[in-house]
Every structure is written in structure tokens, then in C-alpha cells.
Image (cartoon, rainbow, N blue to C red; front, side, top):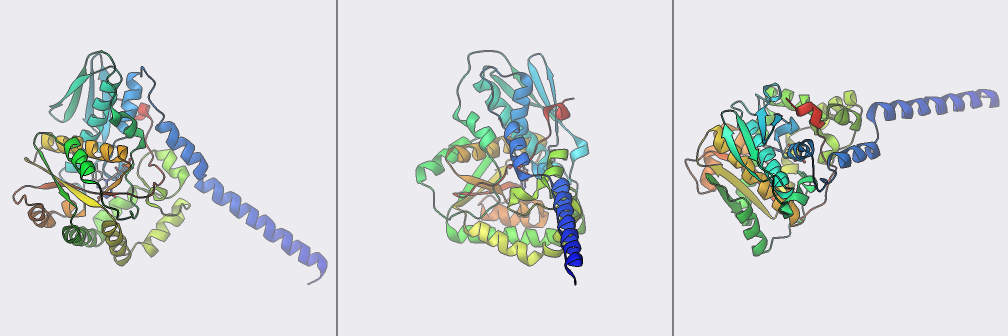
Length: 361
Ligand SMILES: Cc1cc2nc3c(=O)[nH]c(=O)nc-3n(C[C@H](O)[C@H](O)[C@H](O)COP(=O)(O)O)c2cc1C
């Protein structure tokens, strides 16, 4: 190849690489841009926040598949949290159990944020929705307020360090809620049995085409897609690479295997300091909302103590595994609602949320 051809090929290669990098960047978006977006969503409340700011704090709650299955209606001294049926996940949650637990999580955030900033009130379940009725009074500082924007589901390996007994007591006390039982597992042999149930549930879900199709619908592989929809499970929040959306789908088909997931869950459970299992005393909306409130308080308290937490709900979602899980918790006859591991570990990028305007009725 003469010098002129060589220069042409080199120039062409540079141009194509540049176009490729540009195309990649513009279809994926930047993580720096995503992180700025995630911090704006979690900006601290002003000393005298508007109702819309309180609703923003409510939406930072844990919720199944990050579908954010809620709508808010504010009117005078009440804020109603209503289910959003368009955000149901019938494969993983055919009876809307997770949907109502998610409403309970949001309701608890709302109660904490409003009370701490001068709008104390009470929550009640009204048919399908949760009502927060409030008055105005002096702000009542609550350490859980600061934990609301700091909390995240951290699906990473933890470092295995055990918790001090006093911290376990604080977690237990925080989740105390009428109608909800909490069983804490910190003995390794028992955590091992829970791990086996999580893995059995995960195997069943991986073999279920409806579960996988629904999961794929809520996956986001790029910062751009996560910010555009403001919902769903963004790969970076689970420590996975960001990719253009079509490549993400291909990578998932190639690398998302039952064996790989089994190893991941085994590591995650083995490295956790403990596991919390929540079981309600009844199987109805009001109890599921109460479970959501209890597990949100547990997660916020853990966050305040410098702990990480993540839901591992497979053995709840696969109905045939529930009796074994309940028996392991010493609560045969009750339906287990939530399984949450906790421990010390790293943080990961925060998950997206839709803007408040998108969740108002
Ligand atoms: C009822 C319920 C069930 C959940 N189940 C799981 C689960 O099985 N696995 C998981 O990784 N996350 C689970 N999550 C966590 C959500 O995916 C998470 O809250 C959501 O993606 C938002 O992320 P964030 O908690 O970091 O804000 C569950 C959350 C709720 C409320």
C-alpha cells in the first residue's frame, strides 16, 4: 500500500471510529448526566416544602420492578395515593400484592416527610387507595427524613460483617407495625436455607417465559432510556454495564443464564449480615399496605445506620415456595410478604423516577 492509500485508510478508520463512538454516546447517553438527574430527583426538602415536594419524596420509595404503580391526588388537607392499574405486573404479581406493598412504601415516605416538615397527619386505607389526612403544626425532626433520598436497593455483594445487637434491635423496633410480623435471620445455617429458597424461586422464574418477557419490558440498559422513561430497572443500578438498548437485549439473551444467576444470588446471600422476612397476619390490601410501611421503615432505618439492603423476593413470588418459607420463619400458616437481605457494602447508582407531574391525577 502506498503512502497515499495508507493515509486514506487511516483517515477512514479514524472517521468510522469517531462516528461509532459518537453514535454509541448519543444512543447510550452519559452516566455523568444520569447521576446529575438522579441527584436532582433526590434533592433535600426545603424547610417549608410544597405538597409537590412531599409527593416527590413519596415516589422515592421502594416499589416492585420500579414500575411506580401509583398516582397522587392532593386536595386541601388530604393526599390520596391511588393504584395505577396500567403499571401492574401480572406475571410476577398476579394478585397485585406487590403493587399494594409498593403503595405502603410510598405512604410511609409521605408520612415521614410531611410530619417532619410541619404537616403531621395519619394514614388510612380507603378501598383501593391510601389517604394521608394532615393538619399544619411545628416541624418535628425525624432522622428517617434524611434517609429517604439516601436509600437505595443495593444489589451488590456485601462484606459479611455481622451487625451489633443494638442495631438489630433498632431495625426490629423501626419495623414494628400492627398486623405485620418480622422475623430476622442472622444465623448462617438459616440464611443458607433461605438462600436455597431464593435460588429455587429464581430457577423457576428463569424457566417462566411470561416472567422473563415482563422483566425485559421493565429493563433499561442505557442512561438515556432510564432518564426518558423515568422508571424500570436500569442496568447500572445492579452493577451491570450500560449499553445501547438493542445491544442490551442481545447481551441479556446471551449472558442472563440460570447458572449465572444462581452463583450471583449465592454470593449475595452468603455475604449478607442478615435477612428480614415480613409476614402479614392477613392476606388483603390493608395488610399488604402495612407490610410496605414496615419494610420501608426497616430500609430507611438500615440506611441511617450505614447499612445496605436489597429485596430477594423470589420465594414469595413463586407461590409453591411460600409454605416452606413461612415454616422457616416459624410462622406456618401465614403468607410471607417480603424477604430483604441487609449488611455492609458499596453503593451503586440510584434508580430513576418519573417526574412528579407524571404521577398526579
Ligand atoms: C414489593 C416489592 C418487591 C420487590 N422485589 C424485588 C426482588 O425480588 N428483587 C429485587 O432485586 N428487587 C425487588 N424490589 C426492589 C425494587 O426493584 C426497587 O425498589 C426498585 O427498583 C426501585 O429501586 P430503589 O429501591 O433503589 O429505589 C422489590 C420492591 C418491592 C416494593
